[in-house]
Structure formats: structure tokens, C-alpha cells
Length: 328
Image 1 (cartoon, rainbow, N blue to C red):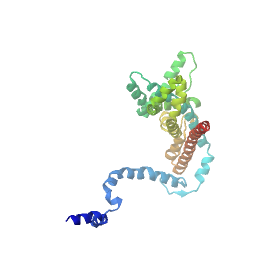
Image 2: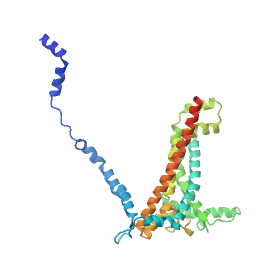
Image 3: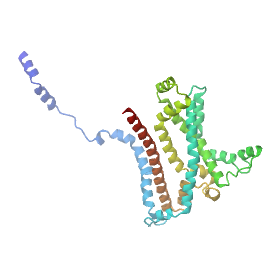
Image 4: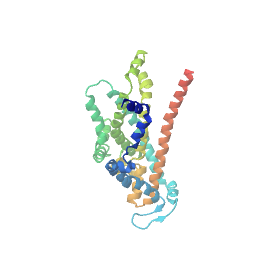
């Protein structure tokens, strides 16, 4: 018996062969093995396919058609895009969108960064202030437009009343070209400053405190710490907010539509690209041209996102090269 056990111990291949002789459970395809999990997540993908992916693909098809939504479609090739390039109303909408984006995004991100820096300090009621700054982002856009329409009203607005009290001429906020753009920009700033501040605050809390301690030991003041430690460490977060704010600013629709209606106000001063697309598709019932405007907006937003990303990446590359050169 001992000799038998010794022979089994000296021939490990025999033991392995016995193990392989046992029947293995059948391995079916991943779809058959994990079908309960696939079934659980399928509603999201089905809804995305129906309400997300299909409209995107169908808008490409529509941009080559002439269709009023009811009658038969007529293939027109690139005629919609050719008309778009020569349409002065479209380029007016592009100009309005860029102006509103410029005068709203830069102050908004700067204020958000300052607010986040202040909220990161040891101050009282920090939690209450975080909620208060985020509330405008979840406030109803319709209610907000009514309030801002009353504040910036030409005849009985609070802003003009304050200007009259200071002896300054009243401004036709809702009936002049620049007044309309400034009013829409203020609405955007008021709505999204707190949202971006919360994002910046999350980035600030991820910066190691050792860096701040080392900077203080080296004698750096508050501005030097902010410029040399906070901003470089927040660069990925800043890139994220710049790209999302750019896309959001270029697709601005709700604020001008609720405040000024489908016409974009006096002289179409508040007519943005998306509002013009809505106007053509759902007011003029020209769905082919509306789809062409949508894809033109996609190209513009993609180009701006790539420019922003390249600018931030190039700056990182220059800094990296200097560091490498200094170390060499």
C-alpha cells in the first residue's frame, strides 16, 4: 500500500490526467451565460437607440432631403449646405452665438474659480453656500426667464430704475442689439457659475496639501500659490469646464427662446444657432435645412473643442519640454 502511494506521488502526470478526465461544465456563449445581466441593462440601450442614435443618423439623411414633415421627400444632394453657406440669417445667428458665448463664458468661469477658491477656505456656513450657489442650475428656466424679463424690462425693470436713481440714462435691454445679448449672457452666468464652482471645488480638494505647505515654506504669497500651484494642478478640470462651457454656449437655446420667443427679439439680436435651427425646422417646417444647420453646429463645436484641447495640451508640452531641458 505504501509502495502504491509512493508511485502515485512520483507520477504527478497521472493525477493531472485524472483531473482532466472529469467532465467539465459546458461553456456556452457569453450572451447565453450572462443574459440576465444583459436583459437588466437593455432598456437603457434600447431607449438610446430609439431616441438618441436613430435621430442622429436620420438627421444626416434628412440634411440631403427637401421635406416639410408631411409630404414626400425630395433628394436635393448638397443643396441645403450650399444654401446654408450663403444664408445671411445663419451667419447672423453664428455671430450672435459667438458674442453671447464670449461675454458669458469668460466671466462665468473666472467667477466660478474665485468662488471655488473661497469655498475651499475655512469659512462658516460652507455647506449652505455650496447648496445656494448650485440652486440656480436646478431652477426652472421658464421661471428664471420671467424674473430676468422683469429685472431687465425697458419700461419698469429694476435695473433701469436703479440707473435712473443714479442719474444714468436708461438702457433698452430687451429692444437693442447689445442689450439683448448682455441680458442673455447675464442669465447664462447666473445659471452656470455655481455649477462650475462646484466642479472647481472638487478639483481643489484633490490637490495635495503638501504642495501648499511646501510653497508657504518657500515664502510664496497667496497670489503666487494660486498661480503656480492651484492653476497648474487644476488644468485638467479647467479644460473640462472650458470644453463643456463651449459646447453649452454654442448650443444655447432655452434662454433666448423663453425670453424673446422664436423670432430672437428685435433685429434677431438674440437669434442663436440652435434657435435658428428650431425656427427653420419647427416653425418653417423645413426639416432638411434644419438638419443641415444641426450638422453645421456639430462641426463648429467639434472644431472649437479640438482647438481648446490642443491649446491646453500644447501648453503642457511646452512646460514639459522646459522641465526636461532644465533637468538635462
